[in-house]
Amino acid sequence: MHERIRVHAAWLAALLSLALACGSEETPTGVGSRPMNASEPVAEVGDLSLGSPPVIDRLEISPEEVVVGREIRVIAEASDPDGGPIRFEFVWTRNGEEVQRSSRPAVTFYELEKSDSVALEAIATDGRNQSSPVRLRARVGNRKPTLTKLEIEPPSDLRAGMKVTATPYAEDPDNDRLSFEYSWRVNGVEKGTERSFDTTGLRRGDELLLRVKALDGETTSSPHEVAVKLGNTPPTIRSAGEKPVAGLYRHQFVGDDIDGDRNLRFFLEKGPTGMTMDAITGMLSWKPEGATAGRHDVVVGVRDSNGDGSTFSFAVNVANETQPAGESPPAAQAP
Image (tube, helix red, strand yellow):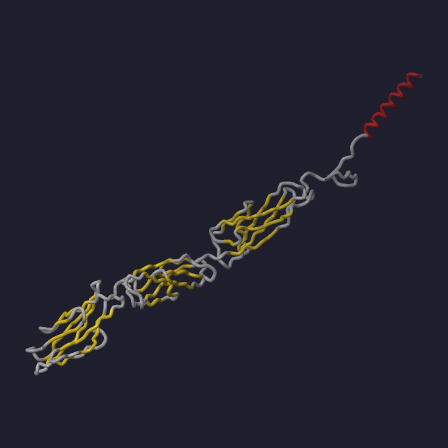
């Protein structure tokens, strides 16, 4: 009897020990520290409903204008409420068509028109959730024109008194309408801004510099320059009238030099026997005694210190009485 009571007691102690052990187990929990309710479904690993999605806080591109052949960098920042690592995906489109989809924060366009629409869409992900997409439009930048060649007319042997005209050649990658900016400088001082320039008033040795730029309405090309030094302009000779004295034929000539050369020298190139010309004063003299009656051709000229000169032609008629009757030369130089 006592033996049976001890067995029952041991059996009851074992049951009591088992009950106490079960009552000491922790209650299972789900996300966070919230106790798990028996009526709630157990979340599986990889369920995208877990946590909060990242948020894109900043999206920019540098430089702000998209230009053909130039790399565009993306500046993107995002935050994740769960503190997890964030990865970006960038999608570039041109006129609505996808050009590049990549995690690389850079792109280079090799074909663009100024009228194209370029857009960027960015999405941030933490591996479980994705952010809402953030979009921005990029402005297609203007490409500056290129001045390819610059010519002037006349191209050489430029002398004072001539009109010089510029002819520029340029290209524009955006096919923009181009205009040109001109700057004429004489010995470093700006003298004109038109396509043509009159060199009247300049002298031998003056330096003429032409600088031209092409403009497309937004930007300008690099300048092209043409520099020339004015050459010598020959002096001209003209009649100042006949001045006969007692049977002596005399005719005064004067020289004009646009370069301001004062060391002019006159000369007789052709004339009847006995005719002379003063090299300094330009006085032509002739005593026609014994000269053959009729027409006598005369050519006179003038030279400057550079050795360049011009000539003047006319005729002197001798009557039978040996009294010369000169044909007064015109005021302008003969061709």
